[in-house]
Length: 393
Image (tube, rainbow, N blue to C red; front, side, top):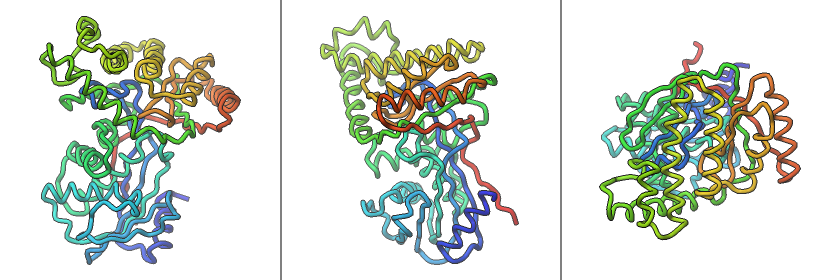
């Protein structure tokens, strides 16, 4: 059955009607290279995926908003009014759309009526593929259409980031929301997180497939360690600013950092800066390799990225390292690295098309043997960003 029909039937089961429905979709993202560089004013290179979050919505005439997620069925329907959008821990996942709604209100949009909403995501939650950002972006897209707000796609991305920073309390960069709304089919985005300038780069990988491997290790440390790394990088920046006229680590190269390492006496702080700076340079080189059709060299830079995240930034852990090292041992894999915040979550792998099935079988068995965990695998394609899906009449 068509997903549109499935979601419409589900909406009818939950809310007992199915009139005036509109359907929106926002993808998750995978970052091909450029990890933990976004909040350091550097470059990232994500693409939107063909999996993400769907939102089926019907406007109401009163000020009530009702939320239901097919991914959190135990939470049931969460009901609130437009007069009370304060953070509420009991509202769980609904705090993400609420944070976006507040951003719209703060920027002048009149939310003058409520709505009933059904969310459904086919992204694994907590796996580092930006399920939270896709919820924020699909909410922003829906609000933009439902209330005729005329907010630009970039503003919707910024509203999602602000909701996460100010409302949820996670100091994420702009990459996840940006990729979710700005993605294009078969292209990745080179985004300068310092200026928000960006360019699309075709992913000429016809002979290869992108495979996401989910470690199924819950990222319990991810948010706290993310904020910790942010502080460590800010410390490194302040030390370098004693001599250098810079506003972010993304403004310097490896040579400049090496020439000024005496300003950062703490080895751990220096290593954090070294990763941020070298990963930034590596991302630019990798994009050039892709443009020149040197796919294997792009893969090698993915491998270098993982080693830097493991040794300098220390955000991988046994599960991610095992997934990656298993991938490296397979002849069909030309590049593998962790993606996302780390401490669990996913890896991204570039694999020869004809060896995909054997690769998945090999990595799955190798990973289980070491960790006693079962990894899940997703063969994904770079896809378009958030958009409305028109329902059949």
